Each structure stands twice: as C-alpha cells, then as structure tokens.
Image (cartoon, rainbow, N blue to C red; front, side, top):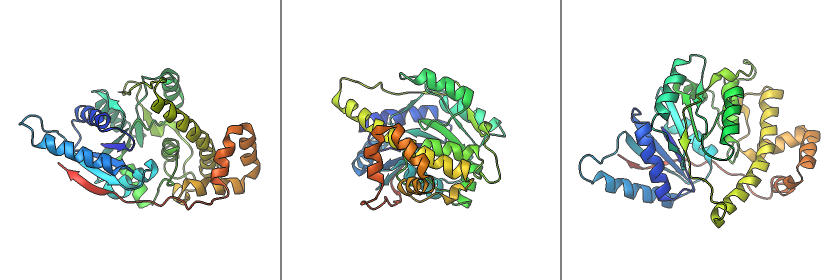
Length: 308
C-alpha cells in the first residue's frame, strides 16, 4: 500500500493513514511517500513514534514506512516506488494523501483485480464531490484510472522495472499516462489498446473533504489546479502522439514533462497551434514551457526516515 503525500496537513495525513490501516489491514506494509515536504515527513515520524510508545493495543498494523523525497513531484514519487521501494508484493495499492478509504475498498478492489486474469491493474471510482457521479458513470462505461485509489499487479510492476519505464518528471497527468501504459500492456508496438487491462470496481471508493469555496486557501488551490489542468491538455496531446500515433514504447518517453511537450510541439506544430488557439488561457502555460529559461526538474531519490 502506497500513500502519496505532499501538501497535506499532519491531521489530514493522519486521517488518511488511519483509514488506510483499517481498509488495508491485510497488507504487509503501508509506505507513506512524502515528496517535497520534509517538515511533514518529520512531523509524521514524531507522531508515529509517539503512537509506538502508547499503551498496548494502540500500535498500528500493518507495518508503516515513511519515505522523504526531496523533489515535490508525484511522477517522480511513482518512479521511486516502482524502481526502488517495491519489494515484490503481489499487488500494490496507491492512494493520495487526502483520501480516506472506505473500510471495504482494498478488499473489494484487490479481490476483483486479482481474480481478473486479463487485468494488469485496477481502480476504484469516486462517490463524493460535484463531478463524482458523472466521472463514476464514465469510468464504469469507458474505463479509466483514478489516482485517488488504484492498484497495479506485482508482475506488471516487475515488467515496468525490467523495461525501464518511468513517468516524465514534472508531469501533471500521471494518472492518464499510467492508465494508457496499462491499456497498451506496456508496449503499443506489440499490443492494441484494450480497456479490460484496467479493472474498474464500481463499489470500491473513498471519502474526501469537500472544497470550501468561501475559504481563501481552497479558492487558491482551485485556481492553481485549473491552470495545471490546462497544461494537462498539452501533456495528454503529447502522450497520445507518443503512444497512440507513433506507437513508441513508454520506456522512450522523455525524462521530463517539459521535454515531452516540446518534442510534441516540434513534431506536430499544426496540432500544437490548434490547441493553443482553441484554449486562449493556455498562452501563459505555453510561454512557461517554450522556449525554456528554466532548467528541467531532476529526479530525486527517497530516504527512509521511519520504520515501524
């Protein structure tokens, strides 16, 4: 079980971890990957140490490992888990740091994905939020891969290791790309896109705190998310070009999301301009990517800061 954490508060991350320990009670270990927030990693280890010395019966099970990753980037955190942390588990579950799993979520998704021999991974569906109903129905009909709660089988992770498949650092659309890689069975040259390679469970779900539109922090987060989603449109177009049009291996993806978009814009200038003109708000995003005064993000490795 993997929790990706970055901007969460300590109480929020504690709630996520507590819900994970209940839902994932059958898992051997819960890895908390705190990326770009050493203070949060330190605060969590302090709290876990306090719990460890609490009276008998309050100790957490399964085991917990907290990793601190200097770079605040989810794509890099995915890469570090797949290539450095994964220890051969038959199935790995992934959730975001603000998600509280339903008590039966891991059992429902794990059993269904394991029993489906054609599936390489699986995903739950959202049940809370304004767009949850529409998204849930679309995922059930058309398939999808939701980063709030998903899983990948161990043999698939091993193949990703063996083939040196990594997500471009700095990528916003990590879920879309991981889902596409699975649907192509890790190799578009040899396999057609097949939705069945992701098992969508209609009842495996989670809870999140609703956005408070009157709260300045939540409004600011929404605005930032909106502009990241605009950049995500560029990334999705570049990903589709790489995997679906040119049928290139995921192992051939550029090291950074910035380079991924630049390569696509150079090879498909008409598509690039068409997308830019269609979404006029993209212009600040396009200017931040092209030409490139800033050095690209570099991957950083995790440090195990707590184990218990």
